[in-house]
Length: 269
Image 1 (cartoon, one colour):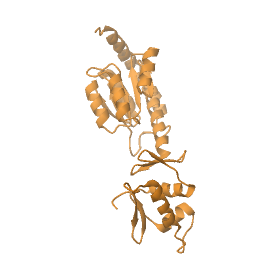
Image 2 (spheres, one colour):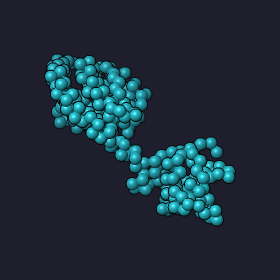
Image 3 (cartoon, helix red, strand yellow):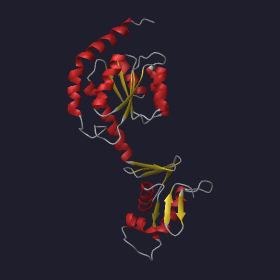
Image 4 (spheres, one colour):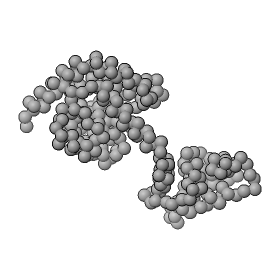
């Protein structure tokens, strides 16, 4: 298998990367802190895995991402890259397609099966339309062709992290129960559960405090807007409704009564 075309493309990418470094860093500086995603000073930096076998490009990408507050780890071959991607807690992966050890396309397909929510941005010298289409259809969320601007890479990584953050903000999940706050769809163990408006709000209240004990008064205030009403048993009634709809005879709903206090979603009964 001839390696010359690939070496020529990678050599070109290295030269362009070196020439673009100062311009790219300047561009990246303008992006710093623009939307708060992994910006310097953040309490928790987003972690990015770079799978690329050219050390010069790895260094270029690492410096650009780190200057924007990202934590960066790298792998120089496909086998190590796949191992890290599957075993590490990364927020995004930047993946070259032409790798020694294991092709990038195979890594991409494996990641899509094992970690479908992790965004993978393909970074490669293979820029033909067919290559880009194949990469996107294999599961990449974005595609950058070498040579590239580090500022553009930073912007694309941030854009994908915003998408993930927005999706996370609209979804609550615990104890195999998942609620989409936008569509109001409720799923438990793969089964769609139909709830009334009040049942839905009660479940959301419990999910937002999963693992915590909520008093009846706290639930009453959050769901019904009552400050205190010692005469009502509406909380107990609706918890009963929710348990019946979420649970079954062999798989009870994970809503536990804490005697003389209130209720808790999740944890030991």
